[in-house]
Amino acid sequence: MDVEEKLWHAKYPGEIPTTIDYDEKPLHVFLEEASKRYGEKKALHFMGKEMSFSELYSQAKRMANYFQQLGLTKGDRVAIMLPNCPQAVVSYYGALMAGAIVVQTNPLYTERELEYQLNDSAATFIICLDILVPRVKNVKENTSLKHMIVTGIKDYLPFPKNLIYPFIQKKQYNLVVKVEHRGDTHVWMKILEQTTPNYQTVDVNPKEDLALLQYTGGTTGFPKGVMLTHFNLVSNVQMCDAWLYKTKQGEEVVLGVLPFFHVYGMTTVMNMSIMAGQKMILMPKFDAGDVLKTIHKQRPTLFPGAPTIYVGLLNHPDLEKYDLSSIEACISGSAPLPIEVQEQFEKVTGGRLVEGYGLTESSPVTHANFVWEKRINGSIGIPWPDTDAKILDMETLEEAEIGEVGEVAVKGPQVMKGYWNNQEETDNVLKDGWLFTGDMGYMDENGYFYIVDRKKDMIIAGGYNIYPREIEEVLYEHEGVLEVAVAGIPDPYRGETVKAYVVAKNGYILTEDELNTYCRKHLAAYKVPRLYEFRDELPKTAVGKILRRQLVESEKIESKELEESNSN
Image: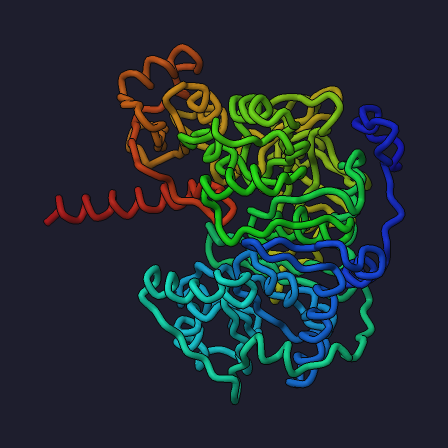
């Protein structure tokens, strides 16, 4: 089917093209171009200190030069283990300029997780915070690491915060790390002081050469390294720019709460801001109070986020003290956006909050609702320019009828090259250019797509197919529910039974009977949870996606331990 023939294209406003002439250039060229166009305009704001585009470009070039002096060659892997801070942006673009493949590494990783990722990627360089040095040193001997570049939050703090921060750090982490610039250990500030920006340009084939190894969450088995080319990332950023057609290049202020070590934050905040000359407000971690203060003071206009982030802000006791009216547009991703949250956030800010959809394997965005035109609540929207999508019948793998639930498959220039050193898994999900997402959904007669759940998360109870998301949507509408996750747990009679894990809003005391009565009003009897567990919090990923599988796994372990104790 030609690009012009897609069902959903009839819904596109005139301002959004159905196909784009993408730039076939390395991703890091965006920073070079931004430096020429915007020069002294502020690119970053970090805890009171700001940096211009020309400064950012100069530091990235110095870092590229230093990598090359240390022997980095094209295709070498550089692990970046940093929260959102200027160093994360500098090292990312510096590594790409030097010809490296970036390996985004979560600073919260345990030694076991870190060692696995470093070994799988065969990274030879790592950039990390000073407080993470002991963790890196403990695994270094078991990996391919040759060099460790060490920085600290204080390195980019304004005076006098830079002097006070080490004392705060000592109190918070009970840790004082002294790092010397010698051997295989390199100190960030020394590098910038002693290195010139005269790096050697590397020839990059954007469609073939990798920019990134982005590891998936690993909720099923070991994490897999998603191979994303320069062109994958460039095309997704340019799609994003086309979708947000009312934004003005060089004028927006973007709130960077989503971590850049996650592909969603990396694309929609970091790469998008660099390409469009927007100022980024970097926040190293999500704290609802700090985010509210920052919005009030810094006046961001764009705020990519995740449902749990918006929920956290809306339920902050001091919400009414802050002016959030600067926010004009937000695309929510990483998890389903409850309608109640969407409507409440728009009421508070006066801006637009719409749901989108994507995967690590697609750089990540494939679908979104329109920000300024008609949207469909509960839908992930329609495919982005040059992105094809279809619903596949689970048994025949043929395209399903409109309205019929099946597996969502997507195709487009943002779809990954494959999994790193894992041809078997690549072949399982990539077929004739189509990425099989593992998500269950359907398409309506207007080309809008709806996700009903992960294929792996579908509950089969008493022969019925039950989708946790549907039950979660109902529970989120209860006035006392802050967060909820629904999962299937083993049941000797029904095969599986439905269990809801619930976090109550402050001041609410929820009971099983109350929620049971509520669910029976809104759900068919077989979908109503049989079990409820009330918790203070739910396990989440770095971007706030609730880890449903982790709840299921802990349930299985508890069940097994109970069986063993009973048998003894």
